[in-house]
Amino acid sequence: MLRRLVVASGIAMVAPTLPACHPTKPPMVEKLDETLSFSGYVVDQAHLLSDAEGHALTDRLGRFQHDTGHQMAVATVSSLHGEGIKSFSIRLANRWGVGRKPSNDGILILIAPRERKARIAIGRGLERELPDDFCQSVMDRALVPAFAKGAYGDGIDAGVTAIIDRLAAVEKKAAA
Image 1 (cartoon, rainbow, N blue to C red):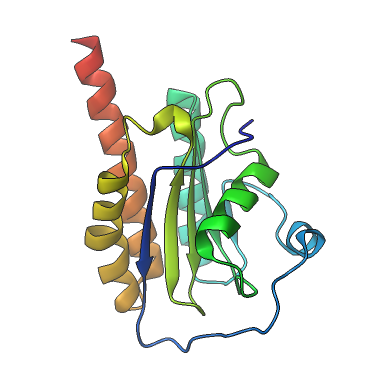
Image 2 (cartoon, rainbow, N blue to C red):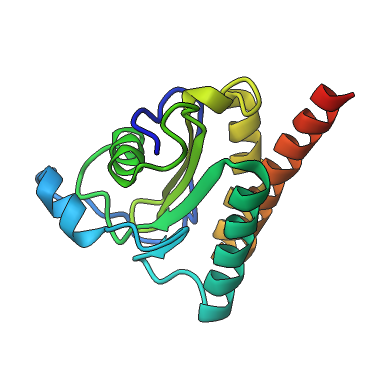
């Protein structure tokens, strides 16, 4: 279980055609905990994924954790409630305990479509393998273009693929 998920990240504005949301006050921690509980690898509060996409992604992330030990979660939220996406994602990942506590190797992909923002948050234990510039590249090349077309499932799948492929390449290189 992860307790500190910080540092490496990619942040982007997404889906420019969606309306922005400007709430007037930030949420209480209790509100976040009550409305966004960890129920599996994929928590789709914003209803961006079809049932088939959600199930396929859940299966894939389960296999990823089984094969590597690392844990990756995807969350879509209906609103950040006025909080910045960076602090929201860190708080959410820490609350959920994404990753293994001693390794600090969790990954959270957070999408907030109403605010047109997304973030890839990486635990400190993976920041060498998944540095900021890599995460930003995944945002720019995989997530944002698909999100701009309304293809959230495709974008999330492409982002997950890029992260899994990068970790596999790093592991292969280390084994050589």
